[in-house]
Length: 80
Image (cartoon, rainbow, N blue to C red; front, top):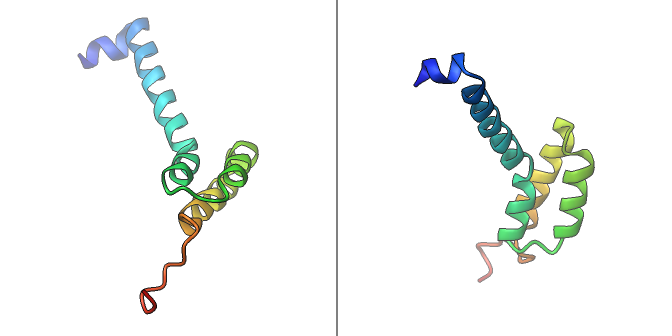
């Protein structure tokens, strides 16, 4: 199988497409997290990720914002 991937145009194309799908999934990870956590800042996180996600700093900021914003509730363990 490795010979087929490395030495055929079809194998290279399949490998390229798999790599492209993985990169896209990582790129939109902040948007997916904001959606699944029901963040009230979903539109802002999506905009930041689309406009500045190609920079590493923009992507990290969008990821942290998505994780921190959560579902709008405070993460306070002392007051139930």
